[in-house]
Length: 188
Image (cartoon, helix red, strand yellow):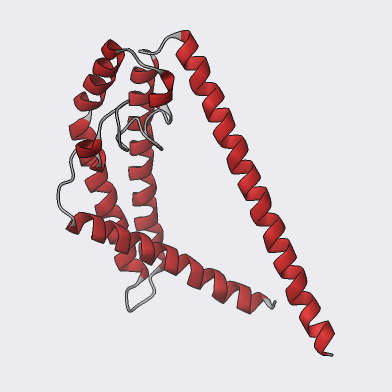
């Protein structure tokens, strides 16, 4: 591939990702209020559904840790105590991404504005990361040492599976690239 093609393809991909994120944020905002962290109606921390303790939550796999009823109530209380912060952070992220999307898709290219809005998104993401870490620490402190060890084991297992998936994807990409390279040779 030529450098120009790579540059154009990379720019197009980046624009598609940013545009997709903006569309996703806009679509999510049109759905209206969905409860705490978007999933509370389906269950909460440690309960059924995909609440904050569900997949991708504050502590992924929290339900697999066999929490006591007291622990479930404590986790729920900890999550509820930060509900307003999570909602404010989600709104700030939505606004920052929409502002970035607006400058990326503007009629006139303005690199300085794009960099500024990208930095704004990064600041909001950092604030969200700090909030999640703060809540994670609160919830983590509620777990017994055995539950904490089990959570670490579950996390390691998830990471191993992700690594295997990435490895298979890389192998597939490599095979696909080899097939593409062989096609011109077969035609010639």
